[in-house]
Image 1: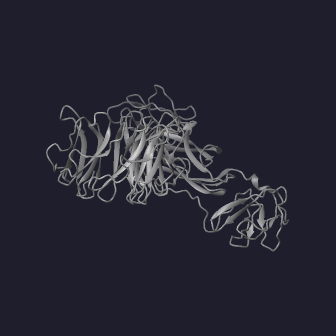
Image 2: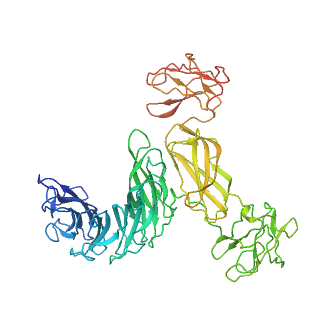
Image 3: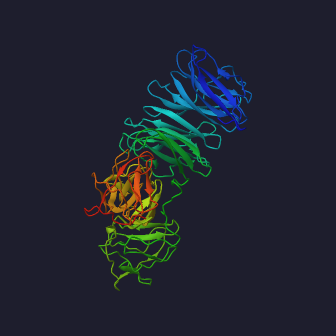
Length: 623
């Protein structure tokens, strides 16, 4: 915990007595020099064990420390102590009792109340049947402020445990936990308590994520606006490997991002143990332990902005001030005379709006409804009468509308409106395919969409190689795109290889991802860590380097044989090769064409043989 002066106060449980665990603490200044008694000051040396301390600033250069305590000899309780900037305990020796209810209380976490005291929350089994969540506030003098032994935060069925807590900025706290009330798996829940200890959201907490399989090992940070950003390990992909997801909750307990959270990292293998910090702009920076290499654990990080986007990429999901047009299958379009935009159908549609005083009072039987743009709500709406032929003189809110749709000069309604398709069209990728990219380079995708799902849709783009998702990819999450038409943005990148992305998957789902409306693939060619398409001289290496075959999207291929040309033909200016020791592609250019290739650095010997259309010629000069 930072001490407010560039140093820190550290606490731990300590077995120096040789009999029981105790709680100690030490302060270090900005130069790392200890400020209190050598080896730390005793915070609690009561009988039996004291474990699992948690610490928070008291706002005055000292700290409030809380822990699990077994001094009663019959159960675990929660105690706390305040130490001043000089390391002197300020409350009762060995701490004040926060909770001494029956059975076990354990694993407390703590946050400042903003007034020199703290809000402490813990896992509590006083019910005798399962773990619940309780909390207590202690003031700057160490006096409990709420119900004796704490207020109930969650007493739902089965277990609630693995807590985290953050200030709500108003003297209360937002408490999060993993929850097994579903019986089948762990989910993530949250509750806000005000300064008086009164829960502010749904009884027993609001759902942060209840996706398939387990969500666990979460962390939380303030969003700076009275809400919180929560991140966790998520096993929804296959129940075996964990990914990292996140969700933002506003001060009213309403999730702000994609239902069940946005994907922060879905790289191959496991991503574990996320930690999180506010970025100062309403978003967060998340870091985690990552096994995508398949050989060892590494550390990765990602920033999530306040709107839930990664790297600042936000899909275009709202209509512009002048509303966008409906999908191409929509030909019944209103001309609205009271507070709504009159619209002309563009030439790319077969029908167009006639702005006149004609007003058909009934819908022909084949027309099932009408799309219209509500300027006050800035969204497209769909109206379907209970019975075809219902009059259209009014349409909610007491407004009157003139409708006139002309097709090839007549006043017929052309097609039933419920025939609108689910489509993703006008796809553009940048950089264009094919392209040679470095690891971490991003491919950006834009597209238009239409949908007949009134609840909106989620749109995904994912890279594929040889029929499966490309290993070690990173990609965008999906916002909830509104019905019924609009445009969006996606992106992906690859972190290791070499590998070629040969297809992009486009997928449209409903809001909760339980239904796939549309899925298709387009062919592309993005080489990560491999030479570009016009490189046809490619080595077969016999000493410590990978023998390589040219992928199908190259025109040449390697012949693995014992032929070894000792000179480069004059028209060839260099050779690409893969160095296994440094795991990267290298380019070798001889000073004079015709230099022998028997050695190429490091004393290794290489056999080179490039075949084009079954001959042994080098095909083209290399760039």
